[in-house]
Length: 120
Image 1 (cartoon, rainbow, N blue to C red):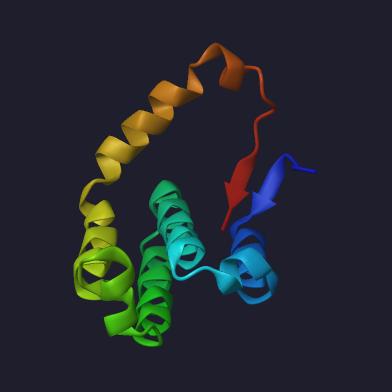
Image 2 (image 1 turned 90 degrees about the vertical axis):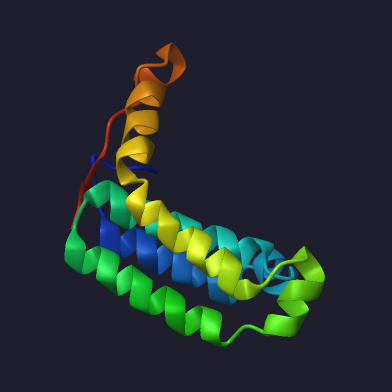
């Protein structure tokens, strides 16, 4: 159950748990793993905390280094380095991402949801 205050470290612990224990993520080629990295990046961007963003980038780089580049290219038709660069481009798109979040948050269905606060 979502609490009013949510610790960012708890979210990252949960994402790590999924990465290690969720069979769908473990058995998929890279789809689930890529999504978890995007989620991590989005959380770091949302908090607008430079230390957290740097931590996510370092952790991301370490994870990506363990991936099979050739197999990734066979699966998706483009280089792992291309996807990684696109992931890091999200940092430069923070303002646009935040604007999308703001616009989505005024949607009537979303506005009715309970509010939570991320705590670093």
